[in-house]
Image (cartoon, rainbow, N blue to C red; front, top):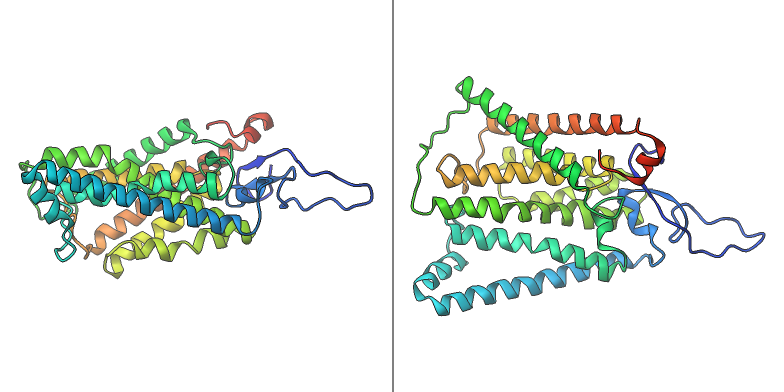
Length: 332
């Protein structure tokens, strides 16, 4: 195991050694090395310094092409159904404010973000010329057992926090719950599209970007902190709300490094976003708000830090597993 307290991956060497030649660095591509998550790009023989740049380029190009396909599909739907076309045109009007309570607007906006998931996987496979699963975790795939546990923990913490807020009266929403004509469609978007949107953001920001930076800079702090400003820029909150985004971004990156994969960050992100859009579907949350109350921000930060502490603690316990289990990255 690595001494960095993060899960590592072991890969066989393909290098040919010569008598009298000093061994290659543990971080040199193609060597048998124990590398933490943020350094995984260097663990494959195909690694060259420019590979991460090509990975980003392929990801961006793929995302753009998928966006064009999404817009084209919307245009075809508009042509086939004029009534639906009016709604799609209104949702896609760049001069109009973005209304996330409109299921069509939410579907298009969240669908655009969700396309980052296949784009990231293809970027790693084609641009990085390494297995796409190497962006999921140190064992080369998504650890579903860990993801399910993290989803359960995040859901439980959200339940506790909301119960406390409502019990103390501080969680009373100024908006009255109601079931509108579009609530069913909005809930469908929250349950079917939001999980992919949340996962896509993790694959891009805590996956591709983190491993790109980690391929050049050894210390995990660079890989954890440098993508944070880009993630924050993607959210249009006032500065109080942006504090919550900063804390979430750092916590998600820390957990990704600590657990050796994206599962913990994805679990927290999915539950938080699904609940937000689910509450918005029944009128309990203003999805268009940019000015978030400080108390709500404080509760959200407390939840994120609690989740981070609990997952970190659970990962520490996992280090007591037998070496054969720990080093193969079995679910825990």
